[in-house]
Amino acid sequence: MPWRGKGAVSARTGYGYSEFPGRVVSHRTVKMLIFQYGSNVDISRLNDLERLSGHARLVGLATTVEGFELCFNVYSRGQACGVANLVPEGRTIYGALYDIPVERVCRDKKINGRKTLDEIEGEGSRYHRKPITVCCNGKKYEASTYQASPDSAELKTTLTYASHITGGLQNLVAPQEYIDYVKRCIERSRALP
Image (cartoon, rainbow, N blue to C red; front, side):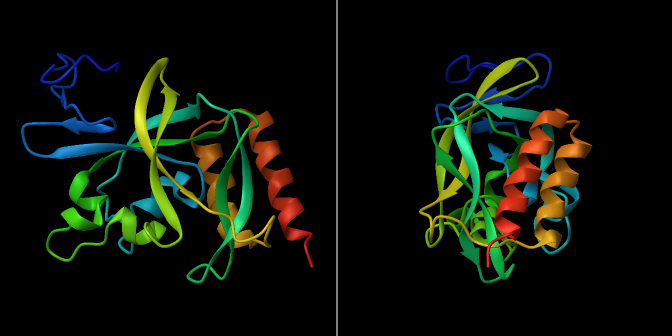
């Protein structure tokens, strides 16, 4: 749904839009639109008990408006491998657009000790939450995503980590051409010494 200004409410969803890009206001809670392109494109992974415990609602398959390249150039101690990152310039990237309560995204809004997406992504240390424009279901959205300063040109990833990306994209019915592109990126990473 396009932005309609502060206080506007959609008749279809009942959500109102705040003045903050990527944030949706309902009568109960503030939600954020989050674009995920790495392992969290797999909704079952993102919503498992170790992560967001079912609090991420899938809006749909989304594409970036700007061009990027998918790389595995950030090392994750938790995954013990190179993990996905977006580098500017390139092609349209596919991923999942989620609607998530702000207290499950932002570390500083955390309640009841529940894990936040900022904590999962390592926001502030490795990754940084940044605004991004995406298209989903024929409409443009201002959302947030996580990008990192790369550790190196490319790092080796694992098949376990990579399978969340390819499986998530297949479940979202991403174009086969894009899934093949992701597989080539994974193979390039896996071939590193």
